[in-house]
Length: 166
Image 1 (cartoon, rainbow, N blue to C red):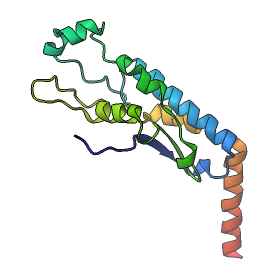
Image 2: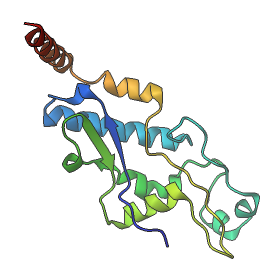
Image 3: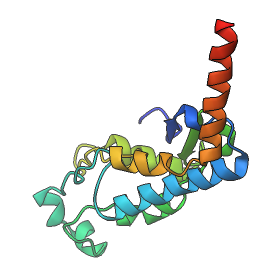
Image 4: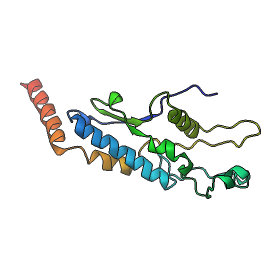
């Protein structure tokens, strides 16, 4: 049995410094939406298709009973993906964190999916990690940071620089 881990994704960027909680929450919720939408398309955090199902698993009664298609999109894990949320207690300063409630059954399921597991006599589930942003997704999120915050950071840095030379 794997040691329980809190499954989260944290985006760190200095542009988040100085934004208010409403802005931080909005950006966090957009990160959740991006991850959920991409995952539904069968794409992982690196922009690659999820590892396909094994031939043996596709022939199994479990596969047929679950009504799965050959496309791996974690749809069977909808409960898991729908419970991903912005985590305000882990988000401050230059960090915005999303994930699952620590210690919850959903968090355990997410760990199982992300790490991949299997037992002798059972189908081995390969690791499939949706928790992250591709480069383009990261750019889209960072464009959401209010320009007033970016200007404020620039002015603060400029003031610090000017103070250091005078």
